[in-house]
Image (cartoon, rainbow, N blue to C red; front, side, top):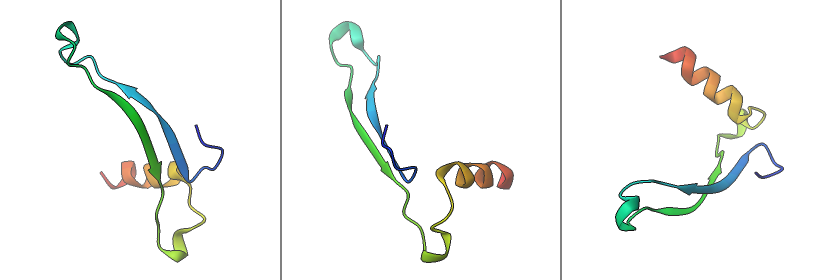
Length: 54
């Protein structure tokens, strides 16, 4: 996990068709890209707003 709250990184693995060796794995990196006025929001704040909107 990245030290910066605006970035997240990690690995993933799926069990899809694992018996035949066709599972998938890789690295995943996410970055929060926002407008200038939203720079102080964290990923957690965006997730909370998204939950409230639904």
